[in-house]
Length: 231
Image (tube, rainbow, N blue to C red; front, top):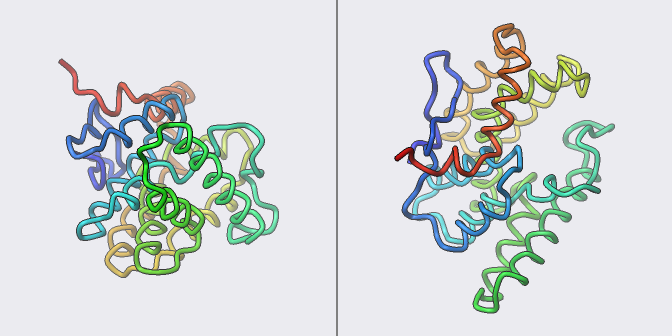
């Protein structure tokens, strides 16, 4: 599995075909990737799962699964604005986003089958509810993995945000600063720093053309590209 921590010669992570192909992925995890196929954050979610495995010794099935689906609500219209008005640590926004994701994932698990233990569903829900703010050691791992996945996969997205007026460069820098400084685990922070430097540099990268951004958005949401090895 090549997902977490592979970087291109430019220092930024670029996925290759099948780079998230992982034989250890459970049937339930595979089903979740089918459910979220086409979501522009699929690469981010796969990366978060890969970072969880790297950061945690013997990461629990609940933690791995929560990492894979923690932002699911953004795939479905009607969620809170992605541009918080009161800063990125706005508890009202974080609560609304995390709760909506937890609700959507819990409904999906409920509909997916009766063989999923209630204890599994309960812990996955708790982890998703805490993925933005951390808490106990396992929840801190998920929060750190979320930040690492953002910083190591979304160089294209922050450029797109600036070009379409979603954020100013100053606004993007605020987002990136927050994603870095909320990491509580020293080892994870050390891993994140080079990605932070590179993604800040991406804001001035004129080589990221509109066609490149469109292609990256497409591949970032393609299960086939990200998870299937070329024959």
